[in-house]
Image (cartoon, rainbow, N blue to C red; front, side, top):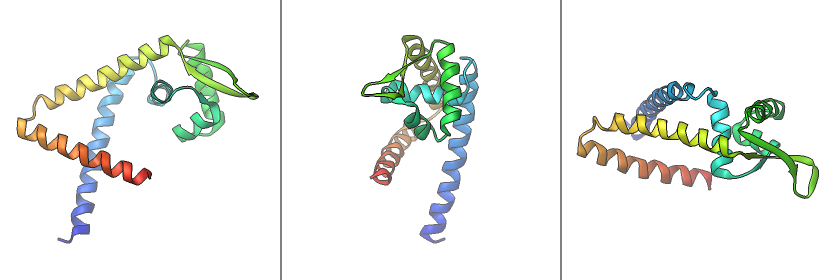
Length: 146
């Protein structure tokens, strides 16, 4: 097998594992009463700070009208607050509320707890290998951004 074939096979395996992990996480997410898309947008606001509507739509890879509807629903639920952006009366800035932050943190804790339970079944050697792979993947992702 060539290096490229090895990388293609490894990539297919990573893709499959990532999909299965995300499906399990979505099962946990459902218990919080929000869609994965809304939890993702909340995550951007919690960890990335306030965002203008157009930037939030860009980060979440949706069209601004779609994000506008999502933000309106989250605002109705008290998860975000929308204000006029500083310096531009036409732009709207979305901020997470305390309620939204608490909800996102609980959902994140549930996801992490689920993963930790899954890892409880790994041997110390397997856990070390996963940790090493995580370091490599983070570095590769950082290089790809730059």
